[in-house]
Every structure is written in C-alpha cells, then in structure tokens.
Length: 358
View 1: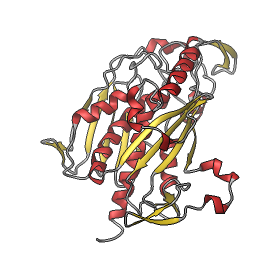
View 2: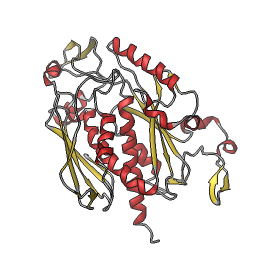
View 3: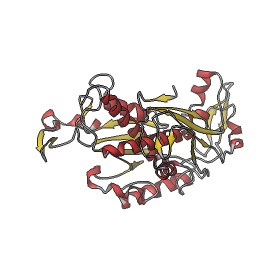
View 4: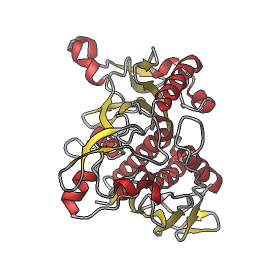
C-alpha cells in the first residue's frame, strides 16, 4: 500500500538508491498559497548531512513540482512532485546482496516478494519519507487558515528524557539545537550520548512528542476512524517506530476514574476542560483541547560493527555494514512526525466538511 489518506491523499514512489523519490497528492484544497521557501525548509529539517549526529550523506533534497500549482496557488488538481537523489553510494551495500541484516526488512521483503533491492533497503529505506514531508508541508499550509499549530520535538534519547511535560517548555526553542529538544540542558546531554553511541558504531532510540494546538472540535469518527487511531496508524507507518500513545497513555492506568476524568468548565465563554488527560480526543473525536502524543523509535537496525547473521542459503556469516547511517533517527524524524500529523488533521477536517452543512 503506497497511498495514505482519504480525501487529502498521498501516493508516494521511489527508492533510496533509485533515481528519486516523489509522489502525487490528491485532495489539496484549491486557492491555498504555496510557500516554496517553507516547503524547502521542511525538507531541510529532514535531509541528511545537517549535523554531526546524523548520517553524513549529502543530499540537497530540492523538490520539483510538476502539476497542481499555478501562479503560486494550489489549483485543486493533483499535485505531482519529485526529489532527485544526488549522492548514492550503492557499492557500500554490495556485501548485503545475499545477507539478512538483523531486525531489518531484508528477510521479510525477500520472503514476501521473492526479490529485493539491497541498496540502502530500497523501498524500506527512510528516504521514502521525503514524500511525506512534502505532503505534510502542503497540509500545514492549508491548516494555516485554521490556525492549527503542530510542533514535534525530541523528548527522550535512551535513558535521557525531559523531566516535565510539554507545557513547561518554550516550544519555539525546538530548533535551537541539533537534537531538536526544547530544553538546552537536556539537549546537551542527549547530543553527548548520541555522539558516544556513534563513536562505538552503534545506534540508540528514543521518543518524539508532538503537540497540536487549535484543532477544531469534532474531527474524527466514533467507531473505526477514531482520530487517535488514525494518528496512531500514521505514526506506526514511519520507519523504526515501535510505539504510540496519546494523552496520559500507559501512565494513566495507575489512576482512578475520579482522578483521570477531564471535568468540563466554561473558559472565555467556551466549553473547556479543567485537565487534559484525554489528550484532546474523547470518544475518537477532537474536543478542542491540545492534542498531544508520543512516538517511540527503536535504535535503527543497521550498526557499523560486526554482527552474526544468516545469508540466503541459511549459512551463518559475520557481517559488518558499510555506508553512511544515522546513529539516532530522532532529530530527522521530528519533521516526519509533524508531517504525518498534519496530513491526518487536514484529511479529517475535509472529511468533516462532507458530513454536515453549515
């Protein structure tokens, strides 16, 4: 399945070491001003080679739009785009031609399709997420009219995590450091840990927190298309993601209902809640409060040290990966999380407009 969304819908194509990565976006509302600088900035946040704690692969990641935009505005027709690959080192993967990397997609792809692209993982590479960032940037531009604000940040790397929840931090400081953490002291510790892990040829995981403000009330369905379920589906489709929780999540199990219930109050003439343990979603539908959730990323599977594995014939071999890889995906995954969230929110907003007449 290479398509995501119902009304606002992305179909992506491309591989890590192919000619490029791109997509077609259906359902983009007409008349949205297309800020090319903003879109490129979003891609720059995801691109490799941006700091010492990510892969050194050098890619410009310049997007070229092929359709659906005229005189700086969306036309309402399909938006086609492509980002050409510029800096592949395919020979770095020759030793993986007949080997299965542990915890990677090599074995499962081979068994499913009977054939695979061993160069950088082919379609299973996170380079596919370029298309998501382009679509997410366009969704953000459309959501500007609704004043919807989406911010994601690194809240944990290994055992190092922010000591307080998002309400205690200035989210405008997320981009002030290379790990994209809003707290400078915690960020420094995270960066040091990632650098140490990288020097050992190893990798490490962590958690990205996302906060969505000013979401209209009423987005989502009460049964199968719950808003939080679609957000979870979006996040779990990202490479290396192993977990998703929203609101109080798993921490909420230790409380009683009397402690967890979000009591309704009137605030500035509107219905609000005294607390937000629900994470802005109740009964699968947005309630107007901040939507917040956490996404857990595993340490990526490709490590630059000797590991035991099997080849196609079932023989035990000693494998050491080559090439340029991220020791921690979190800094580059922050804009991907935001992009998928933006796509879900815009899609549900457009779906909601088909359900009733104002």
